[in-house]
Length: 274
Ligand SMILES: Nc1nc2c(c(=O)[nH]1)N[C@H]1C(S)=C(S)[C@@H](COP(=O)(O)O)O[C@H]1N2
Ligand SMILES: [Mo]
Image 1 (cartoon, rainbow, N blue to C red):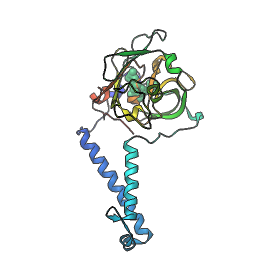
Image 2: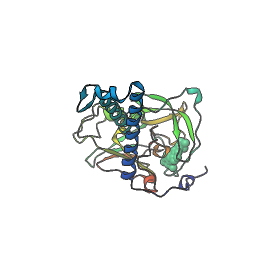
Image 3: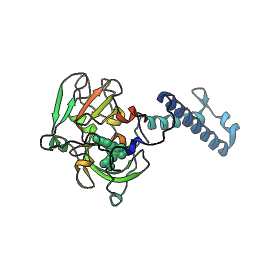
Image 4: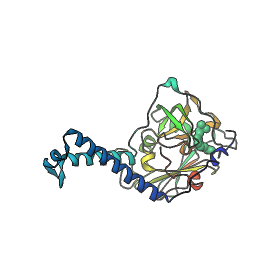
């Protein structure tokens, strides 16, 4: 694409309230899990066997197991604890430059700073690229999927957002650091990320922020990011569509409600997971 227009021209079906769509998707997936479980049991010996089994919380134990597995699966899915698939490095390609919102002005990497607003305060802390690079370097080869319908396997490197928040405790009201396996109760529910000029912005829920594959990314395919791919620092979060992979991070702020999100304002699903 040549400029920022191609993402704005899809034929979108009429929008329904997001909560309604989500609730329906959940109902549907739960029903099909239960259906599969019953079909499997019928194959194993049928309903008679099933109802002769000891009960667990009021229903036959084998069925309870299916329901529990179903619950675990859908919980895992909705809590975003699943991992995006990873690929061999040999499959990595350079993605097209897609979207230049917020990238129009010159940027001097020497004077660039990432500004992070501590949750619940108006205090902002500044970080250099070296601060981010001092965190453990994570490399991963994942698929960048654009809502336009293309996807490219990319080799990314950067720091985990969660490692950043474990070292710099900015996402809790108490100022405690964040252990992503045991997130504190006073953790902010959302983070908003904005380019330095304020022209591109995304909102992320905290499960996405703390996901092990969500990176503050500074390298693409073994080289420092180029300006058009988001130098010096961009977001990579492979369970979400490309629209959430904000290039050229300027500020991060934590919030109680969904932060503004450019593509959600234009009619896309706020979560934009796939
Ligand atoms: N600042 C900024 N970040 C952005 C965009 C943009 O327009 N501006 N476009 C997004 C979209 S729609 C996609 S698909 C990816 C593409 O990343 P790439 O240009 O590195 O391939 O960047 C995302 N991040
Ligand atoms: Mo995109």
